[in-house]
Length: 485
Image (spheres, rainbow, N blue to C red):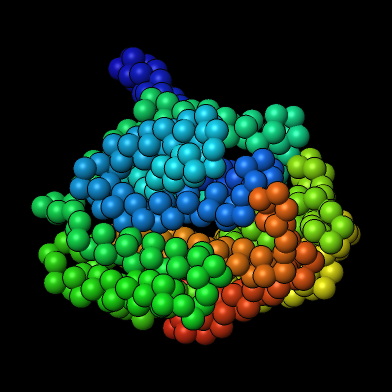
C-alpha cells in the first residue's frame, strides 16, 4: 500500500521536473540562437539600409554590434561567475532590447549605429547560456541540452534567410529592426520566467576592470584604424598611431593579467600549447567564415546599375530560395561531423573543413554571376562551413578541464569575434577600392566582389594552416569520459 501511495507523487514529480527542464532548454536555445539569427537579419538588411540612409559607412551597421559585443564579453563572463549567470543574462538581454528599440526608432544613421552598438551587448549571452547548462540541469540532461543549443544553428541557417527575406520584402528594413526588438523582448521574458539562477559562484573573486578596459580599448583601436585606413591612408600618421597605441595597450593587458589576483583570462590556462593553439586556429577559421556574409550579401542584394553597381539585385526571398540548398548542406555537414568526431581526430576535421571553404570560395572568385554559380560555390564551402562550426566547441572540450570550460568558451567567442570584425572591416575596405559612390551610397563593382572573396579565401587558408600548430590531445570520446569522471 505504501508503494501505491508514494508512486504517483514520484511520477508526478518526475513529470514536473521534465517539463521544467524542457522549458529551460527552450529559453536557452532561443537566447543562444537569437545571436545568430540577428546576425543573419542584419546582413540581409544592410544593403537596403545603405541605400535608405545614403551612407558609405554601412560596414559599421554590423561592426558596431560586433565591436561592443566583443568589448563587453570579458566583463560579462567574469560578472556571471561572480554575481550569477541568470542575472547577467537578464542585464545583457535588457540592454540588447534597449538598443534594438533605439535602432528601430532611428531617423538618421548615427542614431541607428548607437542603437546597434547598445544591442551588441546581447552577444555576451551565448557563452553564458552554454555555461549555465552545466549548473542547472541534472547530469543526464547536460549533454542533451548542450547539443540542442548548438544544433539550433541548423534551423537558423535554413530558416533565417526565408524569415529575413519575407520581412525585408514585405516590411522593409524597419520590419527587420522591429522583429529584432520583439525577439529580444521574448528572450528576456523566457529567461526571467523559466531559467533558474546558477548556484555556482567564483568564491572571493573580483572584477578585473583594468584588464578589461585595456583589452577592449586595444581591440577597439585596431578595428577603428582598419575601418578608417582607406580614408586616412595606410601609411598615414593617424593609422600608425592607432595601431601602435593598440599594440602597446594589448601588451599592457598581458602584463596586467600576469600580476592581478583575479585575471579575466588566467595565464595558467591560455599559455598551455594545446589551449592557445586550439583557440587561435578555431578563432581564425570560424571568424573568417562569419565574415564571408559581408561579401556574399552585398553581392546578391546590391542592385545592378551599369558602371555603378554590379550586384545581382536579388530580393530577400529569392536569396533565401537560391541559398536553401547551401543551408541544408551546412546542417548535414554539422550533423555528420558530430558523428565522425568520436572516430576522427578533430584537428583533421577542422583542417578539412577549412580547406573545403578555401576551395569553394576560391571557385567563387571567378564564378559568382548567377544562381547556379552561387549554389556551386556555396555547396562546397557549405560542406566545409558545417564541419568547422560543429568541430569548434568540441576542440575546446578536448583541450581544457571541466572547470575551465565556461572561461574557454568565452575566450574562443572573443577571439572569433575579433577575427570576424577585422576580416569584415577589411572586406568592406577591399571592395570599396573598386566601387563608386552615388547619392551618398557606396556601391561595388565586380572586381570589388572578386577581391573580397579572395580576402576570405586567404583568411580561411590561414585558419587551415594554423591547425598544424595544435598538438595531439584526447579525442572527444576520451575527453567526455574524463569530464564524467
